[in-house]
Image (cartoon, rainbow, N blue to C red; front, side, top):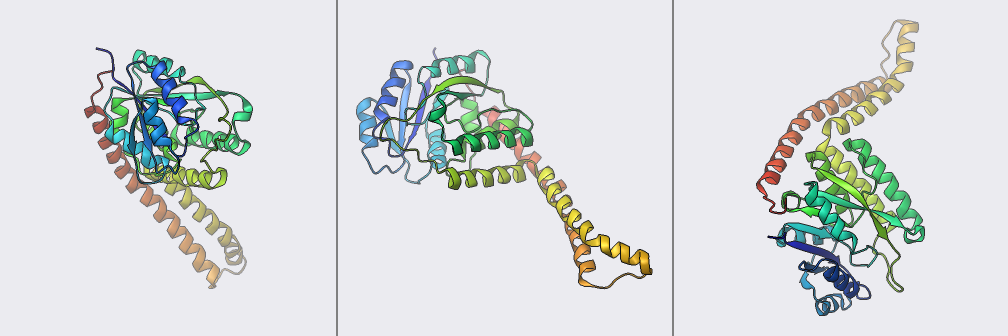
Length: 306
């Protein structure tokens, strides 16, 4: 029996491109069900998608993260293809992504965007490179396009993913889910092209970039608490040492312990730094328990496709 494939398209005001995306994926993946989740569009995106052959549903909470989490919760399939509705990704790549997912028994395939440089805004390109390097360094495995919105997933991955973000941070959270649980995934090259005339990106370079950065810090705090709180503790102790150096010199010169606010502040910073490290050690045990619970959920989500 062939695997059931669901194409998931989050959509906000993509009336100009959504019909093309739906029809192209229906042609590229015969037998797949194409779902378009309309995220409170103010144009005719939902109507146009339905006319093109998609199953249209609605997510009232504004934000790509809310939309993707709703799709993951509602749709039942063996293989999931997640793609944006702006017609910048090549539908033909989905076949190869699904084949790699099945053949190599993976849980995620990321479409690494290649193509025209003008398809990427300079700010997006720079932000993606910085965030990708940060994720690779912090979570121990190299990823080259952490913000790609074109991915294939196994059922196990989708049904074990518990996200909390509501916006464009969702791709980062999905990637970290795979990294922290040690799930098998890989990247494959896929063409990336410009948006059509009149179509505008919903991603705000600075606003969404700042939210993605905060989300990375949150994920490090939750998944790598020793690293997070040890860094804070080291910073506090380093500042305390800088403040305390003149005090040590004064004691060496006079043999008396100075009694002034700087000494009290330095002592407080050292104690706060040590407390931060202790918190990291305790929370690491909590994080380990959470990862074990997530992995059990992953194991319990059977996948007929693999």
